[in-house]
Amino acid sequence: MRDAWKGYQERLEKDPCFIENKNITVISTAGLNYSEKCVLAEYIVKTYGFDKLVELAKKNADFEGVLGCSFIELYADTVGWIENSGELAEQIEEN
Image (tube, rainbow, N blue to C red; front, top):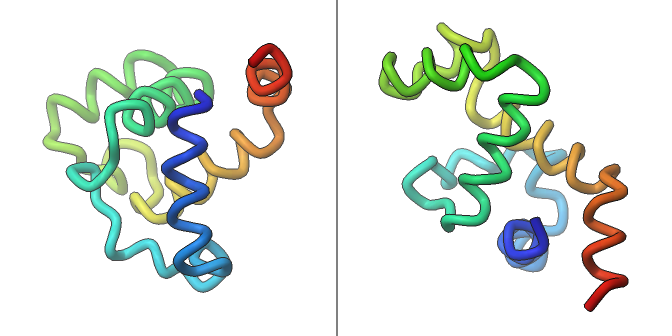
């Protein structure tokens, strides 16, 4: 999760308000690093269930059709989830 957080932090450094401004349109699933994709998948499973992750894969990442939200909304929600996650704080403290 810490590596994913670094990716999010790099985006924040370029535009501190990118989530609030919904300036996430330049980000696509292809633009995410491996760790970010893993955390995004973890968030989907914990929030929507594993079956939705499988359905998302089968429907070629149709976020609105499967999850009822856009990729931008999902990405912003995932960043918020990471920010509020105790796991991130624990991992940072451990190292």
